[in-house]
Figure 1 (cartoon, helix red, strand yellow):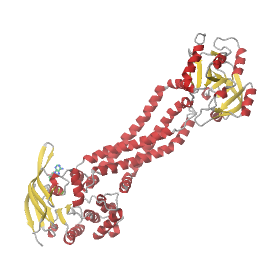
Figure 2 (cartoon, rainbow over the protein chains, first blue to last red; figure 1 turned 120 degrees about the horizontal axis):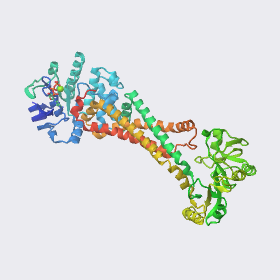
Figure 3 (cartoon, rainbow over the protein chains, first blue to last red; figure 1 turned 180 degrees about the vertical axis):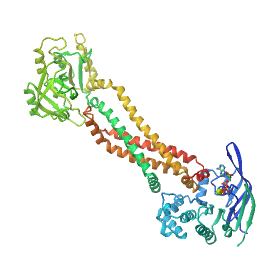
Figure 4 (cartoon, rainbow over the protein chains, first blue to last red; figure 1 turned 135 degrees about the vertical axis):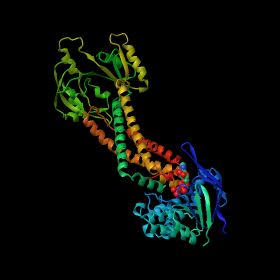
Length: 231
Length: 388
Ligand SMILES: Nc1ncnc2c1ncn2[C@@H]1O[C@H](COP(=O)(O)OP(=O)(O)OP(=O)(O)O)[C@@H](O)[C@H]1O
Ligand SMILES: [Mg+2]
């Protein structure tokens, strides 16, 4: 059994909308193994994205603790969280969220602007990562000149370029055709196996569970099932 | 830094039609602002170029009443006074009343008091010799295409009859700010014709409108003015003396309210374009909410995003403002021609250009502030859910 990179204890989260409180997450306890591929599943509205956002430090729980590499991020303020995210989290979104005015290479370089690396190393590193995801001949293309699958690969390159401790992906294949979805899953799987990246992914895609070491099921804000499959 | 500027530039021209329209609006507004400011400058330019080293003495009751010519000797005798010249408003019509230009009957030493007007020596001598001789300023000569030797017929208004003058010379301004739209002719000629006319209490011979004297020490202008007025205090035509600048400002002051209105309008125009541009910027920033939220998620702080938005809006403002600054002088020229030279001096001053630049940049900054606050406030999770 590996040690946990993320330790979630008794987390609660509710939203206040239209004069009424909606409980989105109730008493979540969960560990995310270091170097593992964890998949969050569950029906729509069950709170998967909310949980992922909490782990990624872009949202805060109402109570409970959330430790990543031993640091409880619920105690950090906005500015500290931003800095922490830039060093520790790689984001992959359903709709890629690339900057349309930047080329593939510039998009991948974006997180490195916060790293203090000189321009030349930033460029080389971005080019290297784009090569890893198989887009070495698309460096100077803008997002609207790329297919959905290619855009998502640029986004994956952007997520790994600063070598984060944890990669979070919210339905990364949700907007893709079958083949592209398969390619993206393979790529994430490879990143996990070959580069040892810890990945937490929200998905509806049952195929994704084949790559996963841990599958967590949420329903109505509660953790209903948790399976570890050792490959 | 390079990243911010490049991205700001790319962002600015994402919707290039919208951006070009914004730039066009800004250009028009800053241009209009510049022209209105130039109108104000032109209005005051006569007074601004008027001297504080010359005194103007007029009838204390009103400018419409004259002073006896023999005051000249008395004024000359006062301590601190240099040369004393005099002038009388003529007010003739050249062919058509809309051709208005100022004409003065003046003393022979008039140009000695006004070194601002430069006439070569030959022409000066020719003028002195010609009884009906007149000199015209360069701007006036250009307006009606007057040449030396031309005969100018004037229909008298205050002074009845038909008058004809011969141009003896064309004087130049000592620099570009000098107004040279006037015609001067000999007071002696006016006076001699007046003497031959039937007696009229309003048109007495041997009178002048104003005496203009140079003073040796401008810092004693007030003191010398008092001395002049004091010496005529108990005569039947008491005088009022002030510096030439104060005298000219007195004319301008009559239209002070109009000037203030023009000034206000010029700033209102800038304010309107600010509102328009702030709205456009908010709109384009709102469309990009998800992008900004993504950048925030990646760890970019609000300050960085603010720099991005401000650079974009200042860039647009500077482009629009620069085009306006470049277009202002030719537009001013066109405006001057179109308005039939009501403003003989219509030059865009350096101060106007600086005001144009400052207002463009201010518009750019303020227009970027509101959308920056928007981005500052939006929470990452909410921003990420925004549809683009
Ligand atoms: N910012 C918010 N304000 C109000 N309610 C929210 C907010 N974010 C999420 N919710 C609510 O929380 C619940 C869980 O949302 P969440 O996005 O986590 O679900 P999900 O499991 O990711 O669903 P899906 O599979 O459709 O993406 C939903 O009922 C949603 O309406
Ligand atoms: Mg979701």
